[in-house]
Image 1 (cartoon, one colour):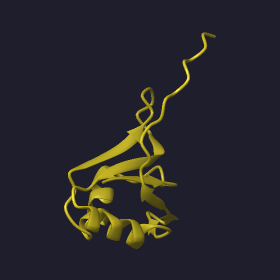
Image 2 (image 1 turned 135 degrees about the vertical axis):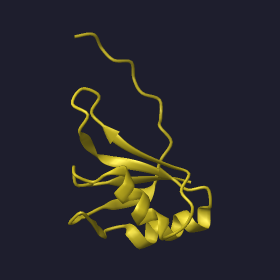
Image 3 (image 1 turned 30 degrees about the vertical axis):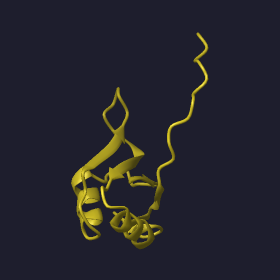
Image 4 (image 1 turned 45 degrees about the horizontal axis):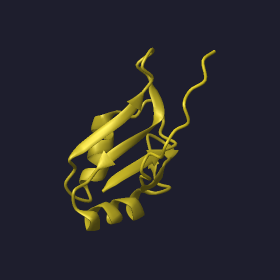
Length: 89
């Protein structure tokens, strides 16, 4: 299951996310979203957990809990929908 984590403190690292989610089970991937120009965190991430029961436990256990002093939003990631074409500037 792909899990969305929002409202992250900009100082949170992939290792910290991996550690928080590892308490609930196996993690196959952690993807902290960063700005492509500055390289700084955008304040959200995705964690992939292969076992849905463990993923559900992680969502319930970590939603609204603080990571680096900030309560995070944790839920199942929604598939990325069709995006409208970008208009030229």
